[in-house]
Image (cartoon, rainbow, N blue to C red):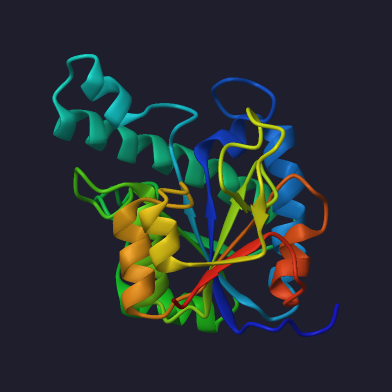
Length: 239
């Protein structure tokens, strides 16, 4: 493969991506499909960090709505992201991709602690760094963690891989007349509540002029196309 447009990116995956067609849990075949493509893109020399959600296992906000303490629920959600990170690590390494899982919560028996300089060193050596446990703090989503890690690790862009092929004015799975944006500004994303990422993540990206490329994870080759700078999905960028 030819060299990609970007030097370093952060790929944000939802926990649901790991469940495949299931409603919950971890589906090895689903993970294997996108892990192969991630490994191929990493082999071009593109430096990559990953942040993975935990919604396929546990959602702190949903549990809070049903009466659980929000902070307690969020910590449980962080642990779910660690399980997902280990599953993705296994799939990537089966495809010959050198990886490191780094967690914002201390659990030295299964992963390294997240230390920014160490993460940068791993990426310089060609390893894919999988950042788990969110920011390590309750009340922050993995979207916010993705924006934070992307900025800390000096990434050129956030790749938000989802189940739809971009950003729409309303949910395209519910409304057939939904209109897709090729590009959209940070402010419009916030004002129209387009649901790209949470408002904290969008604000951080806006304040630091960090583009967010939103595309369909399930279309084969899309990670490579996004890395090559092809016009797929939607780009969230300057106002």
